Amino acid sequence: MELLGNKIKLKAITNSDKDHFYTIATKSYGAKFWYDDIKREKRSKTAFFNDWTEGYFDTKKSKEGQCFWMMVQEKKIGVIAYNKIDEHNNVEIDIIIGDEEDMNKGYGADAIKVLCEFLLKKLKVNKVWIEARMNNPRAIKAYQKAGFKREKILEKKDFFQGEFVDCIRLEMP
Ligand SMILES: CC(C)(COP(=O)(O)OP(=O)(O)OC[C@H]1O[C@@H](n2cnc3c(N)ncnc32)[C@H](O)[C@@H]1OP(=O)(O)O)[C@@H](O)C(=O)NCCC(=O)NCCS
Image (tube, rainbow, N blue to C red; front, side):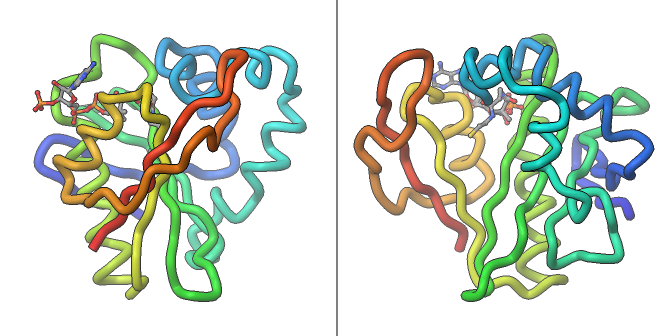
């Protein structure tokens, strides 16, 4: 399955290619903003895929979540994913670009917009949401550029790099 944006193409990640996702998610420059150092360094690949379960790599189970490559020409610059659609028909998304050189070029906002269009129009979800750390202004800006609106601040919601940090919940529509 493929979804086309203005700058990027999203391509469903299959089971056979998911190790590459693990490398981007844990070893890249972007990974430092995604997972806490301790979580990244101490967690085994098996534990990682306990979270990123089979449904994320199986296009036949669209309600169970899905991971997509973000493709710029033929380069897999990162991954965008939606989680299992919940009982209220709402869904959380997440995104990571691997290399610093691919950031701040509008690819993130474009990918978020394309994925949300698919979720809202094709899968008919009610709401798409994300919780970002307040100390990640680039991510917050990318979500806002894609049309997300601030819902609320969640004080000390996440433990990151040794301290509790505030998060912001953003939603669309
Ligand atoms: C977050 C991420 C997906 C955004 O994608 P991206 O392609 O870099 O973002 P975009 O280029 O679409 O938008 C970023 C915007 O933030 C701005 N920005 C960058 N650094 C910033 C900062 N420190 N403060 C404020 N704004 C900043 C950019 O200038 C750009 O805005 P502009 O287009 O108006 O100039 C990507 O940077 C990434 O993968 N980061 C690491 C992982 C991560 O943080 N994931 C999100 C977890 S919630």
